[in-house]
Image (tube, rainbow, N blue to C red; front, side, top):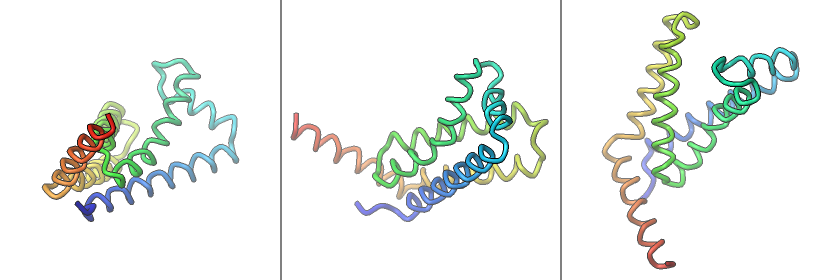
Length: 142
């Protein structure tokens, strides 16, 4: 089955997120390296500093893996996108005093659009067909 336009649009949005994260990280790291590392270390105060840095970089890189997985029809990428959405929204609502109402609403709208793009009937068929194709291919080579 040909990839639905909704999956392609969702992948493009994830690539845009990745580009923005990369630009912000590099800019922040170049102009304020000490503050950059300190912010990464303090991002998850319940974790040790070194682990907080790894988690922060991992979350920044996640949209790239999601986008590539979606473009190749991997069902796992879709579920990682859902997990990323849930974690993102939980973090925003837990720390809602750090965000303006406009940012919270914007984040909810963007995440809602992404979930709609990934879970509409056409996308569901695409991921279901790719799953059955992968299982058939795996059985051939087993």
